[in-house]
Amino acid sequence: MTKREQRVMALHDRLPELSKAQRKFMMQDFQMVGYYWKRGEVWCQHCGHVEKVQMPELAVSLEYDDYICPVCGQRLTLKHYAQKGGKRDEEYLEQLKTVVTTIGGQQVFRTYLSERRNVKGEPTEYQVHDIYENWVDEQGCEVILSRQYSRSLWHMRWEYGSPWSVKHHNGNASGYYVTSDIFDISGNFFYPVWRMSKTVMRNGWRREFQMEFQKSVGWRISPVLVVQNLLLYPECEMLAKTGQTEMFYYACSKGRTEMAKYMPSIRICNRNKYVIKDPGIWCDYIDMLEYFGKDVRNAFYVCPSDLCAAHDRMLKKKIDREFREKLTKDIAKSVKYEESYRKEKGRFFGVCFGNEHITVTVICSVKEMAMEGAAMHHCVYTNAYYKKESSLILSARDSRGLRLETIEVSLRTWQVLQSRGVCNNPTEYHDEIIRLVEENMYQLKKVA
Image (cartoon, rainbow, N blue to C red):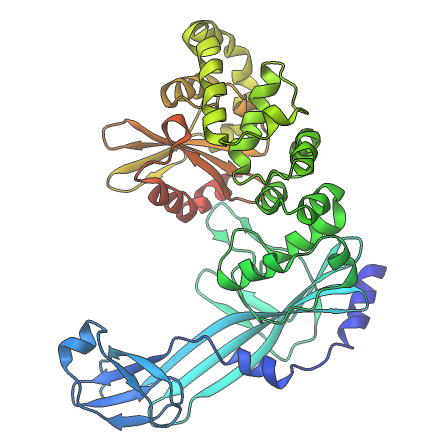
């Protein structure tokens, strides 16, 4: 065990028990349902109270009518429930909930498994178990402490009374199935009172970040990664402190190396109080300005009043130069990049998924990427996405084989960074395409 891990273990013993307010939170946010039997009984899933009530069957089926429990006062949505004959009527729910606190100068994310068990005719039983903790020190280094656990394709079991030990992030693909990262807290519920360390606050933590995490379960980035980026990289600290929130999230996903070249232009935006709303489009726009030799430290260029229009104008100019006049020549030249592209991304070739009217495939050659950019009138080829090591480009097409949108997936965070249709405009299938890629992300992880 390293000295850093030893220090975390020592600090762990000093952590306080949950407060009354925190324990109350652990028992909230479960679905408030009243199960209804045809014979006229309502079973409250909040307190367990059972009462005979006659309700219209159709109103219950359509969830049109609700019910206020006379014991606990909760307003319940009524759902039909089929009695299990001679078997015991029992319902079980669990949620992961995280308390954010600090101790010894370290930022601590304490995660608990909150369980609710309902047995008909008995009071509702709640149990709260501490299962793992993510610690981030002032240098941005993370240490994970956890109870013992076992998991497989069919089960996930925590040993609640087991001793704490140091663990590591464990999302991976074995070739047979994909395992999710147990210690990724981005999908948890968060206690509304966050205690942030002085160092994190000094480095640009904003309450806006906390509000985003609390209002959205399964958000785009983990709070642990946000804290680490604030502590590790001055560029991210600057983005957070100057209110460039969307660019900050984008930088956390893309990585410091890819974002370094944009920092001088971002500083110009800050001086002119220009907030970047669409980082993907803006970075592509800056890339095109550099391509044409424009001054990317001039506010006239880097702070357009209409970013999409400016991007499209530059893109049209670039398309006129490279695709209308030199497309054939560029495709011929692309042969020399094919080998390196195949070497870097070849393991993803052949991955294909879809539904009844959309098919998504990995772009398997630089030539195909050039044709994609020409057909879609965007910069996937002109900005050399085939050279970006941390990005994977996919193409979504309809049942007739017509291109719909081009998708960029981050190979660092396995997030959809952008999905663009013709001239970077979203199609009517935009949300469905993103959802389809996210649902099948495991296929990409499997071959990574």
